[in-house]
Image (cartoon, rainbow, N blue to C red; front, side, top):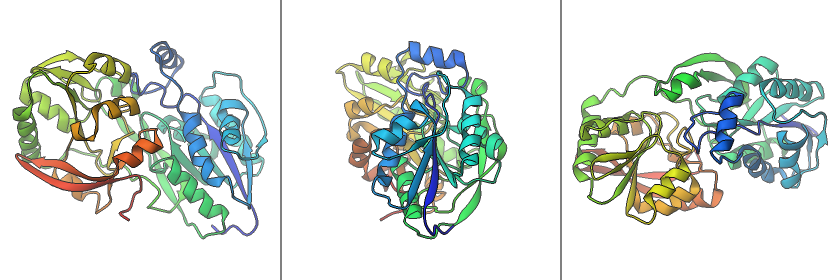
Amino acid sequence: MKVDESLCLGVLVNPYAGLGGSVALKGSDGEETRAEALRRGAEPQAPARMTRALKALADAQNLTVLTWAGEMGETSCREAGLSCQVIGQSAMPSGPQDTRRAAEALKGAGAEMILFAGGDGTARDLVDALGQGTPVLGVPAGCKMHSAVYAINPEAAGSLLAELAGGELVGLELAEVRDIDEDAFREGVVRARHYGELQVPAEARYLQQVKCGGREVEDLVVTEVAAWIADSLEDDTFYLMGSGSTVAVVMEQLGLENTLLGVDLVYNQEVVGRDLGARALLEQIGDAPARAVITVIGGQGHLFGRGNQQFSPALIRRLGKDNIQILATRTKLKTLEGRPLLVDTGDAALDRELCGLWPVTTGYEDQVLYRVSTEAVNS
């Protein structure tokens, strides 16, 4: 795509995307889930994440911005210092039908590309509203982001759009949108299906890769990783056992029940908290020694910000880098094809602090150094 004069950008935010992540609800679909998340003290993050993306466009000259009123886009534009034209509004709280209506209106008003903030449910709504006719780019803001339409973080989305607005050549490609069954997800089952495709900018250094499916073939190696962790647990220390099948094998080695897609708290070889949110984890560990055991999302390579928002910025800072242990087999790391591990915590300053070389446990008494970054390519 070549921009000759001005890029007409549509900005659309699902204000409630990702609301349930930090409070261990593993999703935000449906009015009941949204109400429960708010009752547990969850705070909307999507508008702020869109603001972070839009700040990269504050100085763009060849840019016209169309958006929806209030938290569905206008607020983020104003806070980023962007002039914008509001073409419609929806009653709050908004729902999927409002997202679809806004997307159709933005397209009809002349938006050549739509920058949206949300999760897989929002991407699904855009498939329904736009089909493959209008290019989109996702600012990751949901709990579940298995679709290949998202930038690796808000800043990457902004950088890509700044290049486009500046007249640089940016290709287009079709990217998969996957639909995750939230009810099954809360029961520890990942039930995903191909839902459709959207056009996205073809810039791999800015876009997350689709999560690898299937079981890890190195079952023996996973067991060895888990055995070393199980043998290394210290007394009188809290262990935050993060989500994923590799961590589940650690819990199996310990003879403990596990929340496959949640965060459990272990103390002196016993589960003292199951499927906890960020606030509950902070309250329970207090000032005591505490460590986190996490794994890598295969294919994408994310450590934080994809399906484990229970690890909030405050919790990660409380733990400190030295108290976060990453588990991954060498095979899983090789699927990244040299790309770094990624962090997208919701706090840009913290993301930068987490960059650098990290030890990754890849077997029994076996570790490698691997780079962590906010960018999808090694610099």
